[in-house]
Image (cartoon, rainbow, N blue to C red; front, side, top):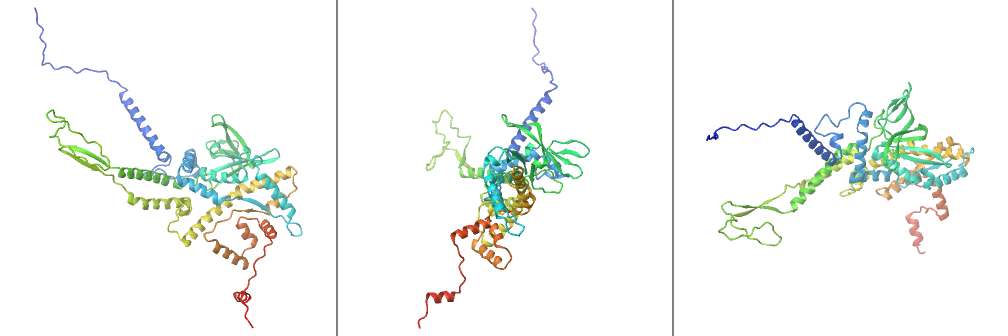
Length: 499
């Protein structure tokens, strides 16, 4: 019988497993997937700034290079999404948009036509007729808007708000049912990537057809919207430039499309939000009391020869607890920056207000430590900006809408009005500018009228009122200005001296 002895000292050969050639690439794909997921989460938390605009520490990103139209094109849709998010969820964005609309549009912008007769007198009959016709049209939502959702006052508000957020807005003027109807088109429906050459002189650039020699817009191309899915299709509709108003504020002379007012402060607002969020977390941590119980290894609570000892793992307010032998408590305290929070936030708020071009106290609503001089100075700077926006809104949008309204009256044989002459004799009544100290402002205006520097009509129009209606209301009230008498004469009348 043979015995087979196994060599116990023989070294075992390692088991050879088949090598997976794609193992490296699988691991790399997993890592890349995790990295992409982290970048998407970071991009979501930072409102897309880490992806589209870059970081301040990176000198090669976040800087405009070359033509401004290329920069707008590259980040157009992303900037629109970020700025819409700012206007909806961020308090600075929401406050700035509402404050600007309130100051530019205010209680309303409406035309006042002052046509004259050959004799030089006012044509009160024609002026009153145009005033009534425009009032009846502007107050009727079914007549003003194509979808019946807004009147002329709301139209002015929505147009200005859309320009602030998206940077631009398109208005299409329709002629339907004998009326002028308005339709507002957001910026994303004019496809900025739609480029084509039609012939030697016409080029479609950023969704707009231009005369290549004069760079004058000839037509606009808008994408249709599927109402069921609320998605844009690439079925384009072309409108002639005479029917479309493109409202935006150009920053450079060769700019073709608009950019939002929020662009200078997007990153600053995002960083402020992150700082405030982190500070709140630190404050919550600091307000909580946390501790760890440490125990010496020489004192084991689980030994069999010792009695069971209670393990203290939670403390309640107002209680006194006795630790077991060998145990100790070590507390953890957060390193909060509560003392630096107020000063740092105030500085960042000043930077945001500077980027938006408005008064800091008006933007934040905090008037702590504001006196009359500083409030007056800030208000004058702010009102200059609002007057410039009012002028652009009137000249670019409202004047064209009113001209089309008058032309529609003539075409529908409702009124016989020389449109060009009527437009030349039309002024726009703007909302009243609120004063820091009304008494001082009124006295200064009276002095200007008495010294012939301005007319009474001009001052009334600056107050947002119609001078003719004001005079009519004064006549109905039988108001008479008080005569100027000296204090001595009034005193003599009240207390006549005895003979």
